[in-house]
Length: 232
Ligand SMILES: Cc1cc2nc3c(=O)[nH]c(=O)nc-3n(C[C@H](O)[C@H](O)[C@H](O)COP(=O)(O)O)c2cc1C
Image (cartoon, rainbow, N blue to C red; front, side, top):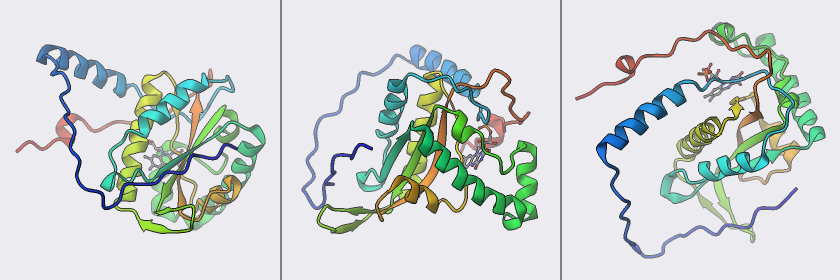
């Protein structure tokens, strides 16, 4: 397992502005790009049945690099992405996840939650955790932890990591890969299996790969623009 290079955040330094002058895109090009993006993003689906075919690893790394450009509260970048390729580690994650999911589906979730999940066809069996060739386990850094044990508070961690994961999913999809946001609850086992430090809390496991040949997805209806947009 590689060890990330220690990051020392800026803290208390003076404001140091630099010029930012991106070239303005002509409106016609903006319109064309936005329409194309809307159409391509509209074709993204959560995949739960994966082919075991390997994916180009650099595509996944590039998608993670895109996610890491996300805005974050006070620019604290409170995220770690653990890319799990090792089959034995994926098996350990699946074993532990299915143990938790069994308890959840046996009643911990409650009737209302189970009813919300029914149209998705999910249950406690999670083959995607071992079928997909890679898992990205996303951790939130609840606080910054220095090498000397010093800590500093992080702000808007949930929001920042949620935005980064949205960018990750977009990058993966637009690069031709399928993904699933899997949130087995509770997720403490992920810190144990992956040996993560005390300041990190698992946010989601994201299997990444190609859909299985016989992949099926629930027939879901998305809200229309008119249903989600309020213009004032
Ligand atoms: C925060 C979050 C948690 C999710 N957790 C799970 C999960 O644990 N298991 C699962 O099968 N799908 C999970 N999903 C996927 C959703 O069920 C899926 O996005 C939704 O049904 C819409 O389908 P679509 O992504 O194909 O549009 C999760 C999605 C989000 C955003």
